[in-house]
Image (cartoon, rainbow, N blue to C red; front, side):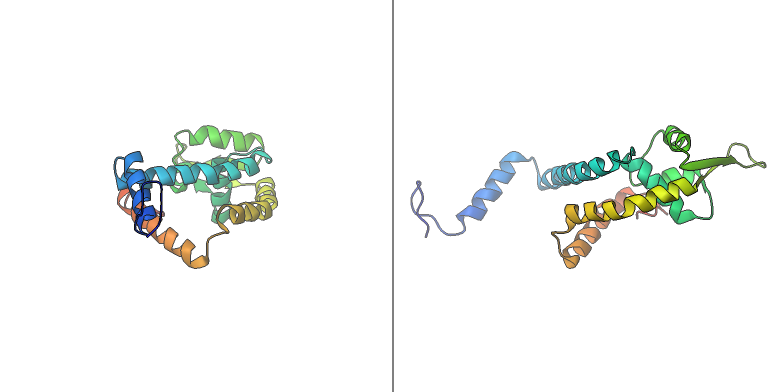
Length: 174
C-alpha cells in the first residue's frame, strides 16, 4: 500500500492513473498512437530541419538527392522519383527546378518521348550528399541513438506493419 492524500492505495495505482489520464486526453488508443507518431515526427524532424537548413536544403530535397545517388549512373524518371520519396511531393517539378538552379541535378528529355523527363544527380550534388553524410549520421544518432538496435528493429517492423495497408501495391515502402 502507498499513502496518498486520498488515503492508502494499492501499488498499481500509478499505472492505472496514467491509463485513466491517457483515456481522458484521447478519444481512442488509435488516436493516442497516431498523435504520438505525429509528435515524434515533429520532434525528430526539427533536428533534421536544422541540419538541412545549414546546407540550404529541405529534407525532401535531400531525399531527392539521396535517391538519385542510389540510382547512379542511371537517371530516374520524374514520376518514379516522386513515387519513391518518403513523403508525397505534389510539386516535384518545382523541387527539381530548385535543385537544378543550384546545379545539384540535371534533367534530360527522351528524344522518343518528350513527355518523359529523367533526372540525374550531378557531381556537385554528389559532393553535397557526401558533405552532409557525417553530420546527418550524427543527427540520426541524436534522434534515435538512445534506442537499442533491438528496439529500433522492433520499431521499424511496427511502423512497416502500420503503414502496409495504406501503401499501394508494389511500393518500395510496403
